[in-house]
Image 1 (cartoon, rainbow, N blue to C red):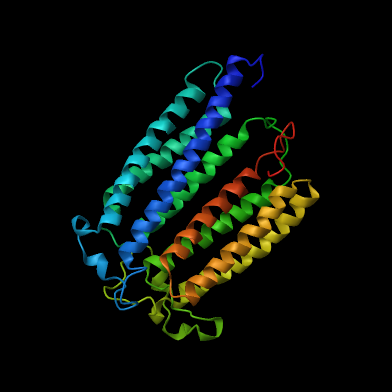
Image 2: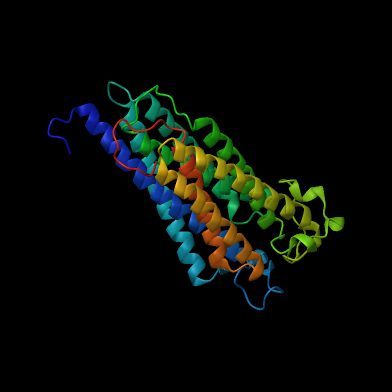
Length: 317
Protein backbone atom coordinates (compact mmCIF):
# COMPACT_ATOMS: atom_id res chain seq x y z
CA UNK A 1 0.00 0.00 0.00
CA UNK A 2 1.44 3.44 -0.92
CA UNK A 3 2.69 5.47 2.06
CA UNK A 4 1.15 8.65 0.62
CA UNK A 5 -2.29 7.20 -0.05
CA UNK A 6 -4.94 9.91 0.01
CA UNK A 7 -8.37 9.55 1.70
CA UNK A 8 -9.94 9.27 -1.75
CA UNK A 9 -7.57 6.46 -2.71
CA UNK A 10 -8.32 4.67 0.57
CA UNK A 11 -12.04 4.84 -0.19
CA UNK A 12 -11.43 3.47 -3.66
CA UNK A 13 -9.31 0.63 -2.29
CA UNK A 14 -11.93 -0.18 0.36
CA UNK A 15 -14.68 -0.15 -2.26
CA UNK A 16 -12.62 -2.43 -4.48
CA UNK A 17 -12.11 -4.94 -1.67
CA UNK A 18 -15.80 -4.90 -0.76
CA UNK A 19 -16.69 -5.46 -4.42
CA UNK A 20 -14.46 -8.54 -4.60
CA UNK A 21 -15.99 -9.91 -1.40
CA UNK A 22 -19.45 -9.20 -2.80
CA UNK A 23 -18.60 -11.06 -6.03
CA UNK A 24 -17.51 -14.14 -4.05
CA UNK A 25 -20.61 -13.98 -1.87
CA UNK A 26 -22.94 -13.72 -4.86
CA UNK A 27 -21.17 -16.63 -6.55
CA UNK A 28 -21.93 -18.66 -3.42
CA UNK A 29 -25.54 -17.45 -3.48
CA UNK A 30 -26.04 -18.33 -7.15
CA UNK A 31 -24.48 -21.77 -6.63
CA UNK A 32 -26.68 -22.45 -3.60
CA UNK A 33 -29.73 -21.20 -5.48
CA UNK A 34 -28.92 -23.47 -8.42
CA UNK A 35 -28.42 -26.40 -6.04
CA UNK A 36 -31.80 -25.80 -4.37
CA UNK A 37 -33.58 -25.35 -7.69
CA UNK A 38 -32.01 -28.33 -9.47
CA UNK A 39 -32.13 -30.76 -6.54
CA UNK A 40 -35.78 -29.80 -6.00
CA UNK A 41 -36.44 -30.63 -9.66
CA UNK A 42 -34.90 -34.05 -9.12
CA UNK A 43 -31.36 -33.95 -10.51
CA UNK A 44 -29.37 -36.64 -8.74
CA UNK A 45 -32.50 -38.44 -7.49
CA UNK A 46 -33.17 -42.18 -7.61
CA UNK A 47 -34.63 -43.99 -9.48
CA UNK A 48 -33.64 -41.83 -12.45
CA UNK A 49 -35.40 -40.47 -14.46
CA UNK A 50 -38.76 -41.62 -13.05
CA UNK A 51 -38.17 -39.57 -9.87
CA UNK A 52 -37.63 -36.35 -11.85
CA UNK A 53 -40.05 -33.61 -10.87
CA UNK A 54 -41.64 -35.54 -7.98
CA UNK A 55 -39.88 -33.42 -5.33
CA UNK A 56 -41.59 -30.34 -6.75
CA UNK A 57 -44.72 -31.55 -5.01
CA UNK A 58 -42.93 -31.78 -1.61
CA UNK A 59 -43.41 -28.82 0.77
CA UNK A 60 -40.23 -26.94 1.67
CA UNK A 61 -40.61 -28.01 5.31
CA UNK A 62 -40.16 -31.66 4.26
CA UNK A 63 -36.89 -31.04 2.44
CA UNK A 64 -33.88 -33.15 3.36
CA UNK A 65 -31.08 -32.09 5.66
CA UNK A 66 -28.72 -31.03 2.87
CA UNK A 67 -31.38 -28.86 1.25
CA UNK A 68 -32.36 -27.30 4.57
CA UNK A 69 -28.72 -26.44 5.30
CA UNK A 70 -28.28 -25.00 1.82
CA UNK A 71 -31.43 -22.90 2.21
CA UNK A 72 -30.22 -21.53 5.56
CA UNK A 73 -26.77 -20.73 4.13
CA UNK A 74 -28.42 -19.03 1.15
CA UNK A 75 -30.49 -16.77 3.41
CA UNK A 76 -27.57 -15.86 5.67
CA UNK A 77 -25.17 -15.06 2.83
CA UNK A 78 -27.85 -13.16 0.89
CA UNK A 79 -28.65 -11.00 3.92
CA UNK A 80 -24.95 -10.31 4.50
CA UNK A 81 -24.50 -9.43 0.83
CA UNK A 82 -27.36 -6.93 1.01
CA UNK A 83 -25.72 -5.22 4.01
CA UNK A 84 -22.40 -5.17 2.16
CA UNK A 85 -23.98 -3.58 -0.91
CA UNK A 86 -25.51 -0.86 1.27
CA UNK A 87 -22.05 -0.17 2.73
CA UNK A 88 -20.64 0.04 -0.81
CA UNK A 89 -23.26 2.63 -1.76
CA UNK A 90 -22.43 4.70 1.32
CA UNK A 91 -18.69 4.39 0.68
CA UNK A 92 -19.04 5.55 -2.91
CA UNK A 93 -21.63 8.30 -2.48
CA UNK A 94 -21.73 9.16 1.24
CA UNK A 95 -18.57 11.30 1.28
CA UNK A 96 -17.08 14.07 -0.83
CA UNK A 97 -15.95 13.84 -3.51
CA UNK A 98 -18.51 11.26 -4.58
CA UNK A 99 -17.25 8.35 -6.65
CA UNK A 100 -19.79 8.75 -9.42
CA UNK A 101 -19.04 5.79 -11.69
CA UNK A 102 -18.50 3.36 -8.81
CA UNK A 103 -21.54 4.75 -7.02
CA UNK A 104 -23.75 4.07 -10.02
CA UNK A 105 -22.56 0.48 -10.16
CA UNK A 106 -23.14 0.11 -6.42
CA UNK A 107 -26.70 1.41 -6.90
CA UNK A 108 -27.22 -1.13 -9.69
CA UNK A 109 -26.08 -3.83 -7.27
CA UNK A 110 -28.51 -2.53 -4.65
CA UNK A 111 -31.37 -2.60 -7.14
CA UNK A 112 -30.52 -6.17 -8.17
CA UNK A 113 -30.21 -7.29 -4.56
CA UNK A 114 -33.60 -5.83 -3.65
CA UNK A 115 -35.17 -7.37 -6.76
CA UNK A 116 -33.82 -10.81 -5.84
CA UNK A 117 -34.92 -10.37 -2.22
CA UNK A 118 -38.49 -9.64 -3.32
CA UNK A 119 -38.42 -12.47 -5.87
CA UNK A 120 -37.23 -14.85 -3.16
CA UNK A 121 -40.67 -14.73 -1.54
CA UNK A 122 -42.09 -16.74 -4.46
CA UNK A 123 -39.05 -18.82 -5.42
CA UNK A 124 -39.47 -21.81 -3.09
CA UNK A 125 -43.01 -22.71 -4.17
CA UNK A 126 -43.24 -21.32 -7.71
CA UNK A 127 -42.74 -23.46 -10.81
CA UNK A 128 -43.02 -20.56 -13.24
CA UNK A 129 -40.04 -20.30 -15.62
CA UNK A 130 -40.17 -16.52 -15.13
CA UNK A 131 -39.16 -16.95 -11.48
CA UNK A 132 -36.29 -19.22 -12.49
CA UNK A 133 -35.11 -16.70 -15.08
CA UNK A 134 -35.32 -13.81 -12.62
CA UNK A 135 -33.16 -15.62 -10.07
CA UNK A 136 -30.70 -16.91 -12.66
CA UNK A 137 -30.14 -13.70 -14.62
CA UNK A 138 -30.32 -11.46 -11.54
CA UNK A 139 -27.63 -13.49 -9.81
CA UNK A 140 -25.41 -13.52 -12.90
CA UNK A 141 -25.80 -9.76 -13.25
CA UNK A 142 -24.82 -9.19 -9.61
CA UNK A 143 -21.64 -11.25 -10.02
CA UNK A 144 -20.69 -9.43 -13.20
CA UNK A 145 -21.36 -5.92 -11.85
CA UNK A 146 -19.44 -6.71 -8.64
CA UNK A 147 -16.40 -7.83 -10.63
CA UNK A 148 -16.65 -4.84 -12.93
CA UNK A 149 -16.80 -2.52 -9.92
CA UNK A 150 -13.74 -4.18 -8.38
CA UNK A 151 -11.81 -3.91 -11.64
CA UNK A 152 -12.76 -0.27 -12.19
CA UNK A 153 -10.10 0.86 -9.67
CA UNK A 154 -6.89 1.84 -11.41
CA UNK A 155 -8.56 2.30 -14.79
CA UNK A 156 -8.29 5.69 -16.48
CA UNK A 157 -11.68 7.41 -16.38
CA UNK A 158 -13.11 8.30 -19.77
CA UNK A 159 -10.44 6.32 -21.64
CA UNK A 160 -11.37 4.27 -24.67
CA UNK A 161 -12.06 0.56 -24.23
CA UNK A 162 -11.36 -0.92 -27.69
CA UNK A 163 -12.83 -4.32 -26.79
CA UNK A 164 -16.00 -2.92 -25.23
CA UNK A 165 -18.37 -3.24 -28.24
CA UNK A 166 -17.42 -6.87 -28.77
CA UNK A 167 -17.56 -7.63 -25.04
CA UNK A 168 -21.01 -6.04 -24.62
CA UNK A 169 -22.30 -8.01 -27.64
CA UNK A 170 -20.89 -11.27 -26.25
CA UNK A 171 -22.37 -10.49 -22.81
CA UNK A 172 -25.82 -9.92 -24.34
CA UNK A 173 -25.59 -13.19 -26.28
CA UNK A 174 -24.41 -15.01 -23.14
CA UNK A 175 -27.40 -13.71 -21.17
CA UNK A 176 -29.72 -14.87 -23.97
CA UNK A 177 -28.09 -18.28 -23.97
CA UNK A 178 -28.32 -18.48 -20.18
CA UNK A 179 -32.00 -17.54 -20.35
CA UNK A 180 -32.61 -20.34 -22.84
CA UNK A 181 -30.76 -22.70 -20.52
CA UNK A 182 -33.00 -21.58 -17.68
CA UNK A 183 -36.05 -22.35 -19.83
CA UNK A 184 -34.62 -25.78 -20.64
CA UNK A 185 -34.27 -26.49 -16.92
CA UNK A 186 -37.59 -24.97 -15.87
CA UNK A 187 -39.41 -26.70 -18.73
CA UNK A 188 -38.03 -30.17 -17.90
CA UNK A 189 -36.29 -30.37 -21.28
CA UNK A 190 -32.77 -31.32 -20.21
CA UNK A 191 -32.75 -34.55 -22.24
CA UNK A 192 -35.21 -33.55 -24.97
CA UNK A 193 -32.40 -33.51 -27.55
CA UNK A 194 -29.99 -36.37 -26.80
CA UNK A 195 -28.12 -35.57 -30.03
CA UNK A 196 -28.38 -33.15 -32.96
CA UNK A 197 -29.70 -35.90 -35.21
CA UNK A 198 -32.05 -37.19 -32.53
CA UNK A 199 -33.69 -33.84 -31.82
CA UNK A 200 -37.31 -34.38 -32.86
CA UNK A 201 -38.75 -30.90 -33.43
CA UNK A 202 -42.11 -32.22 -34.62
CA UNK A 203 -43.35 -32.36 -31.03
CA UNK A 204 -41.64 -29.12 -30.01
CA UNK A 205 -43.73 -26.12 -29.12
CA UNK A 206 -43.12 -22.39 -28.91
CA UNK A 207 -44.98 -22.47 -25.61
CA UNK A 208 -41.74 -23.78 -24.08
CA UNK A 209 -40.35 -20.26 -24.59
CA UNK A 210 -43.18 -18.62 -22.64
CA UNK A 211 -41.83 -17.77 -19.16
CA UNK A 212 -45.31 -17.28 -17.69
CA UNK A 213 -46.62 -20.74 -18.59
CA UNK A 214 -46.11 -23.33 -15.84
CA UNK A 215 -44.96 -26.72 -17.18
CA UNK A 216 -47.33 -29.63 -16.74
CA UNK A 217 -46.80 -31.83 -13.69
CA UNK A 218 -45.10 -35.17 -14.15
CA UNK A 219 -42.99 -34.25 -17.19
CA UNK A 220 -39.77 -36.22 -17.58
CA UNK A 221 -36.58 -34.52 -18.84
CA UNK A 222 -36.86 -36.61 -22.02
CA UNK A 223 -40.21 -35.09 -22.97
CA UNK A 224 -40.24 -34.14 -26.66
CA UNK A 225 -42.12 -30.88 -26.15
CA UNK A 226 -38.94 -29.17 -24.99
CA UNK A 227 -36.90 -30.09 -28.07
CA UNK A 228 -37.25 -26.65 -29.65
CA UNK A 229 -36.00 -24.65 -26.68
CA UNK A 230 -33.20 -27.15 -26.12
CA UNK A 231 -32.06 -26.84 -29.75
CA UNK A 232 -32.19 -23.03 -29.53
CA UNK A 233 -30.04 -23.18 -26.38
CA UNK A 234 -27.44 -25.28 -28.19
CA UNK A 235 -27.49 -23.13 -31.31
CA UNK A 236 -27.11 -19.94 -29.31
CA UNK A 237 -24.21 -21.57 -27.47
CA UNK A 238 -22.41 -22.34 -30.74
CA UNK A 239 -22.89 -18.74 -31.92
CA UNK A 240 -21.52 -17.52 -28.59
CA UNK A 241 -18.43 -19.74 -28.86
CA UNK A 242 -17.72 -18.35 -32.34
CA UNK A 243 -18.08 -14.76 -31.09
CA UNK A 244 -15.86 -15.44 -28.07
CA UNK A 245 -13.12 -16.84 -30.31
CA UNK A 246 -13.20 -13.63 -32.34
CA UNK A 247 -13.07 -11.60 -29.14
CA UNK A 248 -10.16 -13.73 -27.89
CA UNK A 249 -8.23 -12.98 -31.09
CA UNK A 250 -8.89 -9.27 -30.72
CA UNK A 251 -7.96 -9.36 -27.03
CA UNK A 252 -4.64 -11.03 -27.86
CA UNK A 253 -3.91 -8.39 -30.51
CA UNK A 254 -4.69 -5.70 -27.92
CA UNK A 255 -2.11 -7.18 -25.54
CA UNK A 256 -4.61 -8.72 -23.10
CA UNK A 257 -3.25 -12.25 -23.38
CA UNK A 258 -4.61 -13.48 -20.06
CA UNK A 259 -8.15 -12.53 -21.04
CA UNK A 260 -7.64 -14.08 -24.47
CA UNK A 261 -6.68 -17.40 -22.90
CA UNK A 262 -9.72 -17.34 -20.63
CA UNK A 263 -11.98 -16.51 -23.58
CA UNK A 264 -10.84 -19.75 -25.18
CA UNK A 265 -10.64 -21.92 -22.06
CA UNK A 266 -13.98 -21.07 -20.39
CA UNK A 267 -16.15 -21.72 -23.50
CA UNK A 268 -14.37 -25.05 -24.07
CA UNK A 269 -15.06 -26.03 -20.46
CA UNK A 270 -18.67 -24.92 -20.82
CA UNK A 271 -19.20 -26.94 -24.00
CA UNK A 272 -17.64 -30.01 -22.37
CA UNK A 273 -19.92 -29.59 -19.34
CA UNK A 274 -22.97 -29.25 -21.59
CA UNK A 275 -22.09 -32.41 -23.50
CA UNK A 276 -21.44 -34.22 -20.23
CA UNK A 277 -24.79 -33.12 -18.84
CA UNK A 278 -26.71 -34.71 -21.71
CA UNK A 279 -24.42 -37.70 -22.11
CA UNK A 280 -24.50 -38.65 -18.42
CA UNK A 281 -28.18 -37.94 -17.73
CA UNK A 282 -28.03 -34.54 -16.03
CA UNK A 283 -25.77 -35.17 -12.99
CA UNK A 284 -26.24 -32.45 -10.39
CA UNK A 285 -22.52 -31.67 -10.00
CA UNK A 286 -22.08 -30.97 -13.71
CA UNK A 287 -25.21 -28.80 -13.77
CA UNK A 288 -23.84 -26.69 -10.90
CA UNK A 289 -20.45 -26.38 -12.63
CA UNK A 290 -22.22 -25.36 -15.85
CA UNK A 291 -24.01 -22.59 -13.96
CA UNK A 292 -20.78 -21.40 -12.26
CA UNK A 293 -18.73 -21.22 -15.47
CA UNK A 294 -21.43 -19.13 -17.15
CA UNK A 295 -21.33 -16.62 -14.28
CA UNK A 296 -17.52 -16.42 -14.44
CA UNK A 297 -17.60 -15.91 -18.19
CA UNK A 298 -20.10 -13.04 -17.86
CA UNK A 299 -17.89 -11.41 -15.22
CA UNK A 300 -14.89 -11.70 -17.56
CA UNK A 301 -16.82 -10.06 -20.40
CA UNK A 302 -17.91 -7.11 -18.28
CA UNK A 303 -14.32 -6.69 -17.18
CA UNK A 304 -13.34 -6.35 -20.83
CA UNK A 305 -15.74 -3.43 -21.26
CA UNK A 306 -13.33 -1.37 -19.15
CA UNK A 307 -10.24 0.34 -20.61
CA UNK A 308 -6.80 -1.17 -19.90
CA UNK A 309 -5.25 -0.35 -16.56
CA UNK A 310 -3.16 2.75 -16.24
CA UNK A 311 -0.38 0.52 -14.92
CA UNK A 312 0.10 -3.16 -15.52
CA UNK A 313 -1.06 -4.75 -12.27
CA UNK A 314 -2.38 -7.94 -13.80
CA UNK A 315 -2.11 -9.42 -17.30
CA UNK A 316 -5.41 -11.27 -16.97
CA UNK A 317 -7.76 -8.44 -17.91
